[in-house]
Image 1 (tube, rainbow, N blue to C red):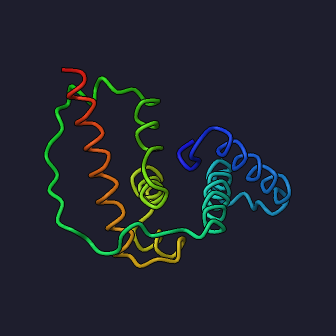
Image 2: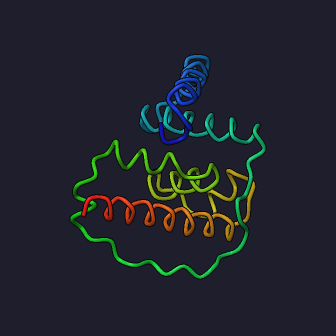
Length: 145
């Protein structure tokens, strides 16, 4: 769900990925976990799908963004589904970079190589994604109060 804009798109991506897993299962060399191998195929399938849509860089360059702290109470009240919903609202470029960096653990260099962008663009997209998420959380905080 983190890579699809909506459930149907995520299901299509997952189905395409599992077809690739099935077709390439004989190529798995047992030199690592099967889970990691499958995860890599799923991520690459999602990235290729966005590449076909001509991945767009929302902004290039890093603007000055100051992160103000978010109260732990508002974060504690958000469950995984609510956080995924906030992430899914991010523009495609921001969402993909955020997922790859913050959730999957890729470095900015790896993200740049995967997406065919500059490392600085990856950093910029991450900063902006975090800022948008922070703004969304602040709005939830205002509603909750």
